Amino acid sequence: MVTAGKRSETLATETAESLGNRATSVFSGARMHTPLEVTTRALEAMGEADADLVVSIGGGSAIGLGKALAVRTGVDQIAVPTTYAGSEMTDLLGETEGARKLTRRDPSIRPETVLYDPELTVSMPAGLAAVSGLNAIAHAVEALYAQSRNPVTTLLAGEALRALAGALPRIAEKPEDIPARSDALYGAWLCGAALDATQMALHHKLCHVLGGSFGLPHAETHAVVLPHVAAFNEATVPDLLAPAARALGAESTGTGLQDLAVRLGAPTALRELGLSEDDVDRAADIALENPTWNPRPYDREDVRSILAAAWAGVAPA
Image 1 (tube, rainbow, N blue to C red):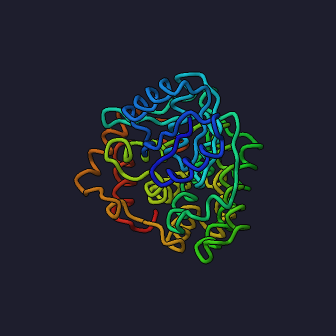
Image 2 (image 1 turned 90 degrees about the horizontal axis):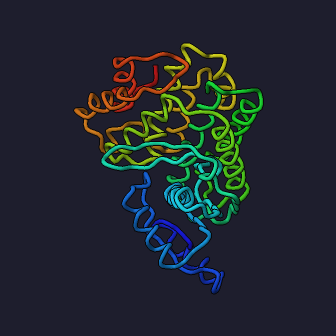
Image 3 (image 1 turned 30 degrees about the vertical axis):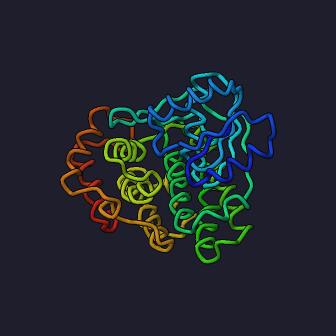
């Protein structure tokens, strides 16, 4: 079965046609944050089609759905990413149910095969390329200070940041630049591989709350929140984030990340994404219901301050 979201529906249909009778069906209902009700419908379609392998084409929504199907059925996956999130390289799956986004890890979640083709990313608008790349950068930044980090993951994350920090501005200036698109996929692959070998921390926790409980768009939320969490952690572990600052050509990682977002024309405030100011306190409360490890300890006031700064779009501090 070929899975995709609406944006990649035509590509999925063409892929299924090229596979001939090997493709039993196309499911193009993948949605952001992998809602459980969508997975349930896809499972039914998969059973009706008697499919024994999933080909996921598109961004994180399509690949997330493929992961959700694989972990429930045991089938193999082929992932064909058309964005730069890098999630195709991880054993992580974030699913939404009842306005809550929960994350699980399992080796069966990670796709067996990933196919990268930069030409498939050219149709991605420059704006989407920007926030998708910043989403990938979030994986690398958190890998740098992860509890289970090691010299290899630090090298992976640093190289990933160098590749994406160089490629994304080139894509913004010239969207049809295939070498730049190739470099961005290379960086995304490294970001995913670094996160796959480590753990997520406060940044991903906040983004999952904002996406799962408030419906904010996934990649854009990462782009807005990351500079503020990076600045918060940088005050305690500046040495661990030094590779990120170097890759961004900035004195500090937080400032460098927001400067890059501005340069790419990406959003820099949660209010631009539809979050109301009244929701800041509720988001802080939800985030503290099940706290995650972070290199710098935090309390509710810390979380609220980070979210308030991200809501307003002020400079990270």
